Amino acid sequence: MAWDWQIEAAEFHRVPERLVPVYDFMNTVDERTFGGRTPDDRLPDWLHERGEFTAAELRLAELLRKALRGMATVNRTGEPNEETAHDLARAGEDLPLHADGRLLLRPYQEGVTGSLAELLATVVLTSADGSWSRMKTCAAPDCGWVFYDRSKPRNGRWCSTAGCGNRVKTRSYRERKGVHSS
Image (cartoon, rainbow, N blue to C red; front, side, top):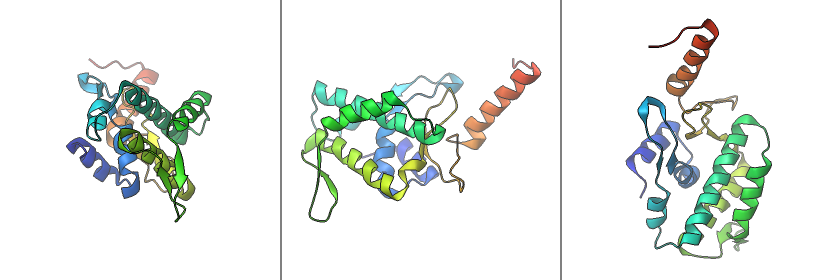
């Protein structure tokens, strides 16, 4: 079961249903620091909801999350990242998939590792239909939240134009004009 804040965020960004599990997984780390927030990591909770997990599965989940979040940043910037590609390849080695009789990708394993492989399969399949390319990380340096870009030109930069976008633009304006907030 996803946390309330994730469900609300998924509804706000209207993430396609098949990408909601990936969206929830990538946002198990909340790096937002604006307004005195403290970063929060809920990955162990996410894993525990899928069963008992080992230290190796936790490391694999951290690697996969890092790789997927890196790919979401590449989706926003358009700039390839070798480290992200390497991390994704390393995670993929431990998350084997196979095509079933209907040519759908399925994990070979069950449990926590199978859940991680299912996320990877979803990313592969949604890459083919173009919906994965709309998953992006917020460009605000104090945010990093993953969001689904619904903009027609597919050029969204912030998880919230009114929130993060406004903060970044205001900060930039003040720096250009030499105005300091108190």
